[in-house]
Image (cartoon, rainbow, N blue to C red):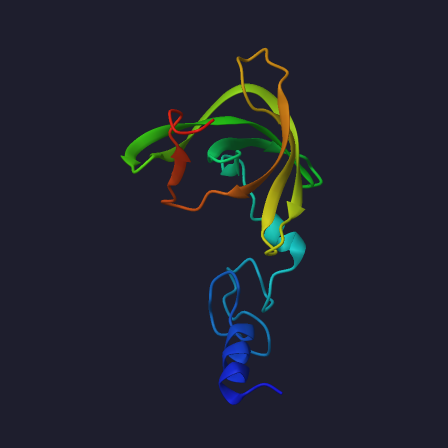
Length: 164
């Protein structure tokens, strides 16, 4: 049995529009301009928030942390896959044994297709094989799952002199 405070928090969350954060009236958003007229997003609505030009990231490495970034160039008409390219980053600082990186919306290399899937947290992810090293003609690929880069996020990658 849930306590009163937990119940009030859950009811409050369920009575707020997930898009514009307005208070719902009869489980409907009162804002006519809002994209959602329901209290909680469907999986399709979460995935439909993916847009061309957004940057996604993945991390990998053994005893070190490496980051790869990709940018969405286009999406399939069904919205189930995205055509992507690798994206560059800039080093914005150094901290301890890490390079502090900020991804940039500058694409490079060959295009590749990624599947749009729901992550463990319910948020959309991109998953598939991508060219991860070498020049534009490289065929070196790895399988990865990419999460959306949130505004202002920086990444701490192990400096190459401290990794394997």
